[in-house]
Image (tube, rainbow, N blue to C red; front, side, top):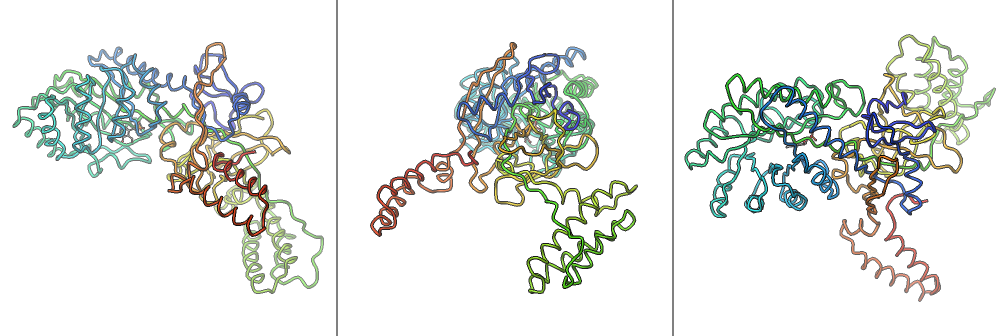
Length: 624
Ligand code: PLP
């Protein structure tokens, strides 16, 4: 468990069983209920569902919503805050219907609402929401149609709030509202000077592309006053960016926003809501620090700090406490999905043969390499490694010119890897390891070929080097003796994972078990429920993976509540404008021609067409 840090990043939802399997603890710490993931995989296979599979654990989603609300309830009652907490789920973080349905159902007891940023997201939210007390926050650029949809939602009784992101939106909103005879609820999104730190800071700060400057907000107030609509101004919103690792940044932003809120009340707006946007981070690496992939606070501390900062700022000016909205997405859904995948093959640097003596006609460059190998000691490590690199390049050039033959080239390659391996072993005895030598371990790592696409399933790992916890799902009582990087099934050299969570504080590779002949080896990528599904793309035409949702019960049983088959090859081809029927028709006429020309028989034509037909219906990933 320590090797992979599962108890640090697992938030109590994941641990290792006595048999060495990774298990899901759907009710978190303090409950003995555990379900082995390899057991779930076995059952999936019996049902004909191949890996890769995205496994969603519904209980974890429920539990994250409860924990957020409970933290705010505790903070509100401890501090005797007068407003309430109203969470909204930002749909962009995971738009899947199933996610919205679960949040709407389970969240209704807490009046958990939705935040939307487009017409499509608004319709998705309305289609799932039943709770009229929950907030429906409309951010994003709003055209007439978007505004009309929101106004109709208000007519149906939804608590819809239109947040003004740009100055020009207000006049359209007021015109459409007057036409439809609805009194709108208006919010303003402010650009704060505070900045978040972390990967996604561009959403905050005065130069951020979103939100209104103080002078634009003043203009809005003046317009509302002039049109006798100031009573519609209900909410102040800001969003500092996602995954804010440092609680200090969060506090300063809340204080600044609370000051703006107070000024809006003083201007005569009724207000009532302060919306702090997203940013509540996930501790992906389990370090509990202010690194980009972590956070230096708990959800309880977040809630306490937020409530306290709003309260102390407003109390100084005798302003009534508003309801606090947060648009936490990542923290609500990240834990809920795990990507399960299998390893297809491993590439290792084999120990090549280095002879006792080299032939007389060996070219000088190779002879020099041999000399470097024979005379390698702890003292001349760096020099020997430099020689190996230099002569390897020289031999490659000579091979191109025809001055080195195949056998000589093989000898040179073997010598190069023999030196590199010896240097890698000896370097750990050095007090200070030179930078160049540190990289040797990665060069020598095994490559485990994995049956998934980084671009489809972990796009942030590729795009912004985000770390996700990754580990074997079984065999954890055996020592993992191999050091590896992961290469995905796409033919793209960027389709790899070569940086991992590092609980021991050394520059890590992933410790994995050697493959046993014929046995499956399963790995899991954890905490992938936020952003990854919708950002994923179709590189090399690998499509959506199979998705399975499970619900677990107190007696340790579980139920597959939903299975969604991944994209088929035919569906993927349709995404890129092919027509499956047309493909089959073309194939049929090509095959017919082949029959006419005597290249295949009519029976072979049948088999061939059946194979293509089945191919179009097949999974895009590697099937055993
Ligand atoms: N609200 C807005 C306006 C956003 O742009 C985002 C995402 O960046 C969020 C909420 C969700 O943030 P997070 O996932 O950090 O909670």
